[in-house]
Image (cartoon, rainbow, N blue to C red; front, top):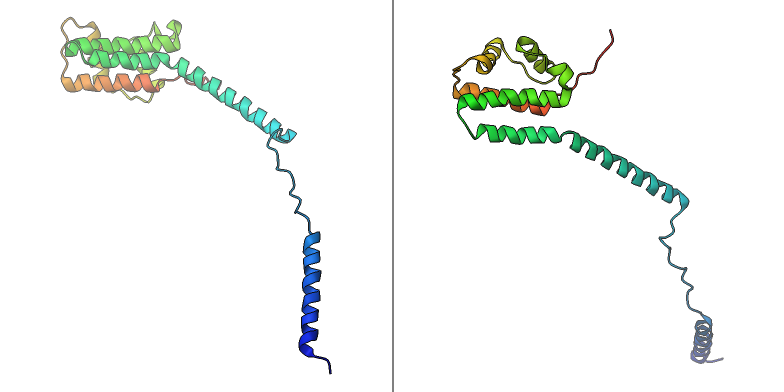
Length: 178
């Protein structure tokens, strides 16, 4: 009877020899080339061009809006200057003139210069978020046309608030043909 140990050892030696031979025949794995980022596909180029064009459009609109509101920023700066100098009557008078100058700047001389009294204050209310009652209107008219007007600090503060709201919120109303 043949020796089982020797047969088993022969089989393992043959398997090891075959395995070593097959490992020697192996070659390195072929790695595909790296994916290139540029130039991208034509669809991505079109998307980038559209986004760039939109960015330039948005920027130009923002710049135009910024430039068109320069007079508002200057008026708010002038309002701060007015509030820090002069008497209450001088400050109030200057604020009323500032409201009119801002209106002239934005709406033009043709539509603003002829307005006075209630028609002026109606115009101010119509083109802003303000509501000015009759007593305030009378007080403001007295400040402009009375030789020695008087005003309290609270009334001056109310006028400062009205002036600031007018400067920040006035806008041209759309004309509707009814």
